[in-house]
Image (cartoon, rainbow, N blue to C red; front, side, top):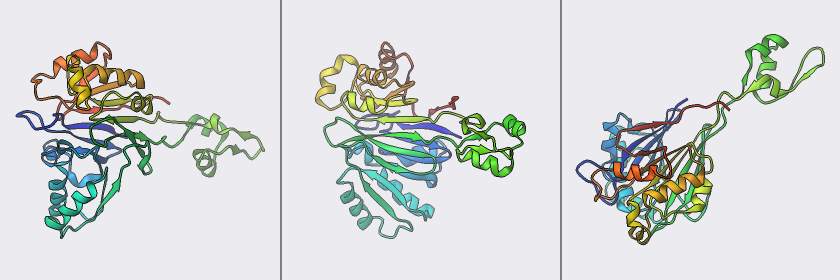
Length: 308
């Protein structure tokens, strides 16, 4: 089962000749979720082979233009594509006012419904869940209300050891019961504990998106043990004062957050346009957190299965 993150945009504040504003597509078991939607997001989805009709939900971290301007053209295009299923959008207030104006002035005849869910950016809360994933809000420290998102894959169903099936001569009904987590009683009356019969095929995976924030120990702690962390790194370490004053992070702030969280890998992005080569930012973050990677547009970061 897939778990992957494709970078659609990595620039802060504005587009540049070779970078788009923030946007990412998260693929969990072939269900796609859009995280932030800067200008040009729909074009980036198409460019990197992601069908916009596959989007199950959209998560907007905050209402600065470089994170939200792309959602409204996308809403229009999904209507042209003939989407029928509702589109769930999770965003802070006053996104509802922005959406109402768009639907009234430009998209009054959409063939599908856009459903806005207000995100309380001060709370770590469950935003949505389905059979495969939970999505949680992560309060961040920015100049406007802002929340990151944490995707946690649900535990995969139990598998029954095929050798134990043969050893105990388990019936279909007994195998089904074991998969439900139950102990199994044999015809002899012997009770076989579930833990002897079953195993998790792999450990549940996770991804944290922490965008537009000063360093936050609380946010890092809420992502404890995450497999992959994206953390904004708008500035080099020498620009710590600018980062603090503008509600952003430096490369070393991002690395500290990954260390605090015990993350397996770190991806940094949201680069200021002053940096033509993000390699210098990545190298700086690697001095504290070696497994750091650039949020290069079009690159997909896969979270592989690991033994439970």
